[in-house]
Image (cartoon, rainbow, N blue to C red):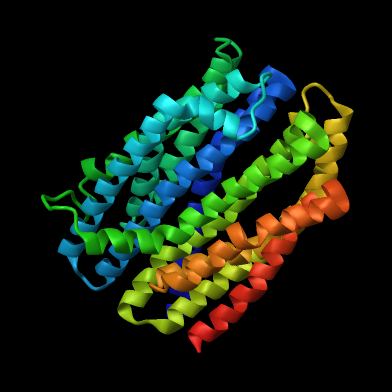
Length: 434
């Protein structure tokens, strides 16, 4: 009976979380589709150069949200309500600090950042516009990530999911309205994206209106111990997003030299689909996090292992399904984003899709395993795994493989990195549980 209850909770939390994170990933995917249709290859290239900035903002929000909400969930399991309020309040302090840093960067350094990311004279104006406004909207993105994590951990996964989906669907609708009928160009795309977390936050206010929240802002000074714990537990989530951004910057740099702007546009198609697939794994990981953290707080080791097993089996089944679909439908998927019907872009993207996504199973395993370590307050193994796949392995492998096999090497660098990280991650997991 307990096993059935555990599986029921897993199914509920995971399904709602995956739907929600899929919704968030559609922020950028919708931009990619409408920008490709409205602004062509140059618009798609500009957007792809700007996406790493979104990764950094979203990574910061997830770091604060996952770190704070994980500790909050453990406190709930131990019935320490006051500690939960202190954790939430200190998380908001951190959000204000990071938001200020991003806003100042957007206000004064967006052009320099655009040039640093590789924008040339043909796409500089569009890239700068997107990055400038994306950074100015960063407080909304960060607060949205934090509230989504806390509301989900406060036993309201349905509301968290609904808020994420509402924000995503509003982004799709506003993208179309701003880019086509209103002809606002690249600004319309980023404006639609920036309004989406605002809408999501507005919906989550129901959690307070209905008085369902068990976490509150309280009068307290910033506490170094809580802040450091927030950052420590949430750091793997940040590294995961940071890694995504670093991979994109590295690949953009290499591909610009090999295939120019057309190659970067082709990679933009692959990178955005990768965001969607990664969001499925992130959704599974975020769905099991409250269950694992709560069980950890209660000392229920058996339930922790059951939830982790369910997560890995679900990930494996979905990974196999995703790769089969991508392999079969690589051509039509690329045509959707290839509005100018550029044959070179089509060939590069189709080949890339079929090679790049051989990484699916390994990436899913690594994402879930990192969140598992965080959920049981073992941040060091999570840090090691995240840094290995996001920094230490991917960059040298990408440069070496591209030098040996050109674009084929670029596409194979990511799956090889994830495979090596998964092998090392499994060894760390065996060592930790023994």
